[in-house]
Amino acid sequence: MAKKGISVWLFSSLTLIALLHLIESISVLIFNNQIKLLQLYPLIGESLQAITPTLYFWGSAAAVFILWGVTCAITFENPVETFLNKII
Image 1: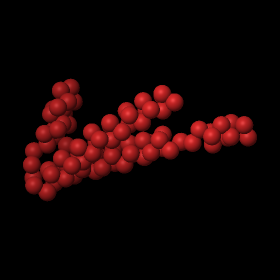
Image 2: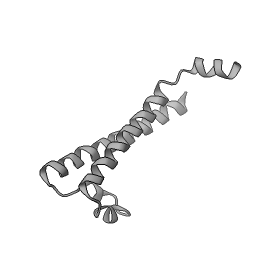
Image 3: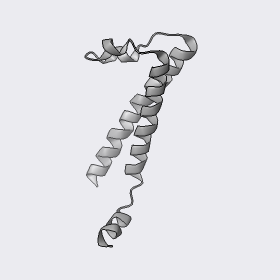
Image 4: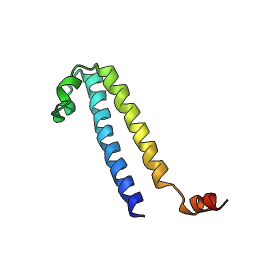
């Protein structure tokens, strides 16, 4: 049970970070702002500054939906159903 809680916490935190990037990418597309959140990653931030705002938007949107789906899949896993599937 503790592993499930840690997994949900980890994936929900990653989803929140991806959502922040999605909000920034929308701001970059609409208001033609600079990409600022990627500068927080010192090792890869400089190389990621070269991506286009459209690619940033679609990449962050895909990350949000994938991470949210994984979080929901972990959260709504029914332990009784898992046990019955092992028995049957």
